[in-house]
Image 1 (cartoon, rainbow, N blue to C red):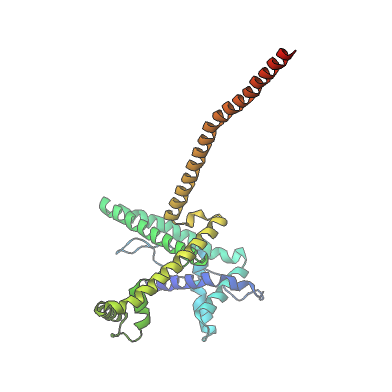
Image 2 (cartoon, rainbow, N blue to C red):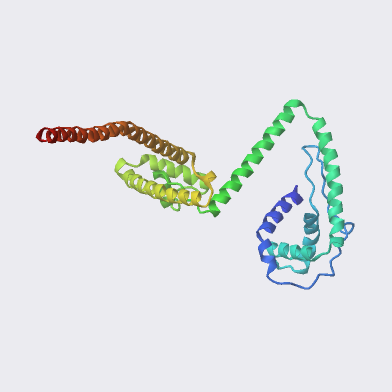
Length: 292
């Protein structure tokens, strides 16, 4: 398992350093031997104690092959810089030079599928169900991590702290205990032993932090709506907006109904006002006829 742990660490560091590779254009590295038969990467795809591991792609095979060479040539080089150098070499290689590593990855993937079928054939239905459940849990955890990273990039405000969180952050350094767990336990005991007037200071700070969070999250959610990311807005905020929109529609409907009801009465008043001058005109006409 040691090569696999090294692989994961290398892959995580490699992902962070891709953006730094386009600064300079070095000369083409012609001294790299791009043969999969020289210094082959030993990687078992099937272990008797568990499911088979997914094989490496061509690039990661090249990284594992060249990492000892780069470190031996540069003993003081950091792991991040070594991975950057190897990635730079990989980009400068031609498709013919990359082909042995990619071909080895294709063959390993074929063997992986065969081993996976053999492994799954040995499992009972309950074990298959448990395996599917664990896979869903892993995928959900990865999705949550990706979402948290995205929210951090978008600048989502941090949640408000509790009174105990504020007390813990202020007294963590001088807390009793050698480990973090022991310190947290001692801080919790000290918090419980505090008097009410001593806790009131931290309670007030927590209330102020609630106001801070409420203002910041409101402005952040308004900004998310403006940029078209309504999916990041909280459900309770969406429900409030829906309720306010429904109330506005209801008030508009009632106002329109009241206007419609008032319009017939206005018409009647207009017709009556028009009829009254006609009656007065008739009386005037009668009076003039009598005088004549």
